[in-house]
Image (cartoon, rainbow, N blue to C red; front, top):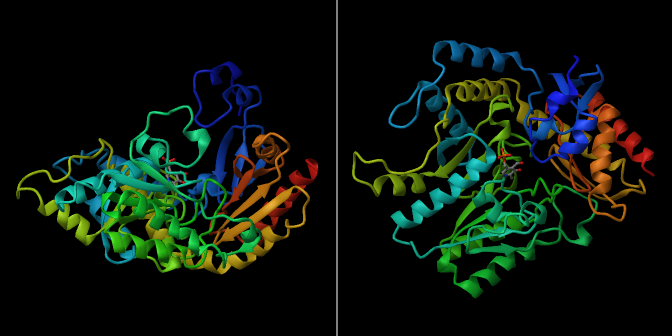
Length: 437
Ligand SMILES: Cc1ncc(COP(=O)(O)O)c(C=O)c1O
């Protein structure tokens, strides 16, 4: 497919080296199943489900047809004091697979918006509950909670913060969970649960009754798949309960089967009060996110207002957009009918063993994995992040898409992957590693 290089100038691309990209663009023009094609006709296997969005594989006709049908029937209905049936159906479907008692779902348009919305739900809940002194939030080093100002305030990645120093006040950061002795652990590390006591320290320093919520990704995804140590999330839950603090799991990556169950909460047997999600909610086809809350939060916030009043002064023009709901419903049907979360659980051991074949490569500094998600950390080349950035580009031209953050590659194939696809991903990964030796 031809294109005019000059025509690339106008789009200011997100999280990209714009100048570098535009000299040799990596343009994808088609995607189907496990594969994408670039504009020169080269075929790529998708090793990261795009950005962890497409567990059912690319180009699912059921989703496209559902969206088309919806757009012809009813292209847009606002959700402020009005509704359309799709949002209620999708919310029920999501509630069915959520851990109990998280039974209420608020729709947004991205993972970042889900985090902002969760922050506001937490504030609204404590206010309705007579606990407005809870003004402090706790997050964690190496966290990624999206790019809006609330999420940036919670973030623990320096590059996402240093340009934007004006953030929310009253955010305290816990230690991240990765330690050297956990290196090359498949699944949950046996050591490190005591890192949860950092939350106790924060409660003792600031007073537990001043803390509104603790935000964590069950697996820190964007910083390279930091799997929680055994017992760590359980201990966070206990400490939150002791102090009346809400626990929020940001499952924007881990939601919808990535850990082998619908949510990581279920894989780890820890139920938070709030779960944020996005990405795989619609198999990446239409932007959408959501926040699920437990019954008590919904009831407390809604019952605190007079009967006919608006209870929560928050929402987006495109919250629960009909096209996104149609994509979400079609996606959830695929997950259910094809048993894709079980398929992820069944494929996990093969996938992780395949990743471990990279273990002795001289450029590999660490491997971490859980479910259908793995982090391959590379030794940096003297300048942190430079090798990862180059490697991601070289992989593209070697026929493989992998998401890198700095020197961490994050592998997360679709759940429809066959063993042969996993082998192809690892072979191409290794080929590019060898070119960099
Ligand atoms: C844990 C987590 N939270 C939030 C986000 C932000 O999602 P979005 O890019 O859809 O705004 C991401 C994106 O990767 C994420 O991994």
